[in-house]
Structures are given as structure tokens and as C-alpha cells.
Length: 464
Ligand SMILES: O=CCCC(=O)O
Image: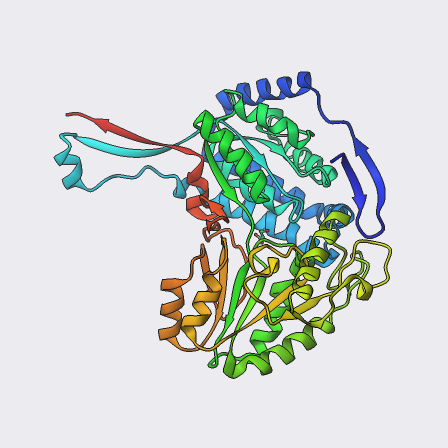
């Protein structure tokens, strides 16, 4: 894939970039290593000051960077502004808390004594240059939620961003430089996917984090495994959204629409499979379909737009194929659907779609639908709802709607996912761990768990 900005709202190529060659990559790796040697010795106060400055600059740039993101990948402009604001919030969150999150830990006195020590401490030390392979869907947020904790922990970052968001990738590097970070603290590598493997194998790169597709995750994890390097993987999701009879059905249906179409339906934590108790199935389905039909699909630069184009023609083709496959196997299209009903706009649009009568044989039951397409399932009771919810290779997040605390306990006990959101939709927050199980990946981002992922957790044992 060429490194280029191609506007998904009209297919126009606006800017192309040459991939960096071996010499430039070598220069940047050397710089990362050299910078780490000194940056690792800076104080939390110094690091926090830099990160707050970057957050302030980002706030000032909000409208400009929002427009760049929308131009590069098509998200509605209001959501792009919110993404920039969320990044600044996470940067401040880590700037203010990293020292506490990484404070030395002291084991219990009895254990210290038992080990024969006079004192034992656990210290979180940085690892070194970390390679971040990031996706286009939240082009600023995905990077910042790695960069903010990594930089606060004393690591330095190397970014391989998705090839369709080069201007956003370059903006992030520039943002950190303008904030006062030395050049090697955070560098964007404009490279193709084929150049990642060599960089990951380089001894100077100590760890990697990847958010993206399962094949990309598998490739990075397998090289990292061979090289014995730590990785965090955040891959796909096909999150369940379970609605039980005691729920507020109007609200559950209203939030379901947002949960499915946020970011034009291209979010790993978007609710994708709607599993509804048979007693409230019809009521929920009517309201949900009504909400999906009412969405404004159109130019993502307009404030009134709810759903813009998909990020690429291939992305739309993939989604169409999933929907067509379901249709051929007997799914009922409650709204939206196949390409003939695609809105007649020049870009890569796809209409908000709801499919019912889903069976296990359909590809859409097992695969992630990366676009505004929802699948509806009917469950006869809680046990069946859990069975359907867990019948997926993915386990990123989950959503349940019920006012019955016993049911909440059952869902929390049994759902195979990295989080359970009750009476609300999944939304990442700097303070809460984010990540999944099964083929959604491993490791956690955000919170104290996220910042400790790329630390050398060091036991310091002192004798008498
Ligand atoms: O695509 C997955 C990440 C979405 C988010 O953190 O809000």
C-alpha cells in the first residue's frame, strides 16, 4: 500500500510520500538508542512538564488536526475533535499520575524478613526504544495512548503508522518536538509494512505494541517471540451487546446505535453483535432499526454528519462481501444492506445496516464487521445469551443491559472479554485497563497496567 493521504469521501489522492530508506531508518534507530540513554535518567517532573506542554499544543491545534484526520480516514469531524481532546486528557492523566503509578513497591515486612533481606523494593525501570505499529481508525488516540505512558515511564517511541494516515503520523512527531522533547524521544518512521520485521529484529528495539488486524498481530508477535521481546497486542473485536428484559429498552436501543456506528462503525470496541432476550426482542429491534435509519450519512467534514465514508475502497468491499454472504445464507436485511442501496455519494460510503436471523455458518457471525453493520440475535434466556456472546474468536469488550444484579454477576463471571460495560457502551478511558482475551490480543493499555507493560520490573534486594 503506498504511503499516501487519499480522501475517502471522494477517492482523491492528496499527498504521497516516499518510504524511508535503510540509511534514514538506521539514523533514526541510532538516535532512539542514544536518546534513551539520557532520557531514561530524567525525572518524572521533567517528563510531566514536557507531556503537559504537548497536551497544551494539541488543544491549540485541535481543529487543524481534526480536519487532517477526517481528510485522511473519513471520521465525522465532531468525532475527530473529540478524539484530539481525549488524547490531551490522557496525556495530562499520565503526566500527573505516572510517578505514583510507577512508585517503588515495598513487599510485606514478613516476606522481606523471610527472604533474609533488610530491605526489598520493586522498581519500574524503562525498557528502551519501543516500536508502535498503529492503525488508522483512531489515528491520534491509538498512538497517544501508547506514547503518553511510554514517555512518562522513560521509554522512547518509534511509530510505524498505517500507510493511509501519514500526515497525522508526521503531526504527532512534530507535536512532541515542538513541546520540547529531544528529537529521538518520539520518531515517526514513514515505512511500509514490509519494513517492520527488520526493525523489530534490531537489538536496539526492546519491545513492540501493535493495534490492528489479526494477521498483523500474528506477524509482529511471532518475530517478537523469536527475538524474545515483550509485546502488547490489541487486535480485532466483535463485541456482544446483550439486552435483558429488565433493561431500559429505549435507552439500550438509542445507545446501541451510537455503539455500532461510532467512527463510521470502524472501532474494535464497537458493539457488533446485538443479543436480545426474546421477551424484548421486537421492541428493541424496532427502536434500533428506526435509530439506524435516522442516521445522517454524508460528508464527514459537516457537523451534522453521523456516518461518513469507510476509510478505503477495500474496506467497503470487505464489508459488502460479509453482508452478501449473510444474505445468501438467509439473513434478513432490516435496513441498509447490499451495494444497490449504498448512498449515491462519490466516496466509500456504506449505509447503516441491520441484519437479523444470523446463523453460525455465516462469516459475519465469526468475523469482525468493520463498518456500520449490526447483527441481531434472539436469546431465550441468560444462558443462551452468554453462549452466543462467547461464540466468537474475539474477546475484547462486552456490553450488557439489565437492572438485575444477579444477572450482572453472571455476565461478569461468564463473559469472555477484557471488559464488561453494564447499562452503557464500551468507551476507553485513561484510568481503566484496555485490552482483550482470545484472538483480541494480550496485554493491557491505559491505567497503571498499561504504563507498567513496558517496564523492567526490577527487584532490589538488600542484605543487612
Ligand atoms: O479501535 C479501538 C480503540 C477504540 C477506543 O479506544 O476508543
